Image (tube, rainbow, N blue to C red; front, side, top):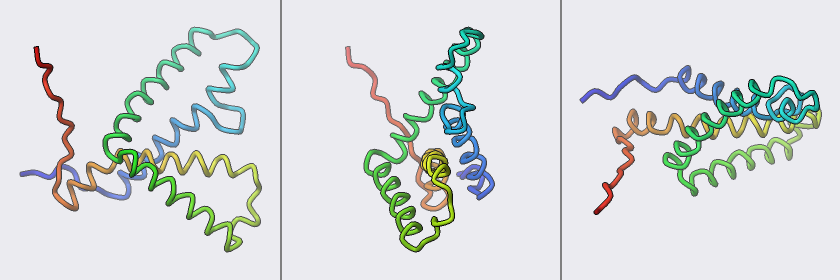
Length: 143
């Protein structure tokens, strides 16, 4: 039985970059994001704004079930707790003393991208390490 393509750091990095891009395109504190663009008062490009909104909504509707299926509510909570604990340890040891506070929202967005990338990679990790396939079973509707 073929195990599929190997799980590598490069493949995980591509997933992380993609999910972080989707999150940054939706909102980032710099002012160049979809949420800032849609709330601007210029009233132009309404069809493009609508199309980009549909595109982002499509990606979220694809990513959220993958996140929920692969990690589950307990796994999502554990990942958030782990990344929060890592941030608090960095803060406690003074590693964040010289970081400007405006970078904190970016760290939250990058951490959320990390959780989404882990969810996208979890099936590949299970397949490579434990040789388990995650299959979503859909029961047929009884008449």
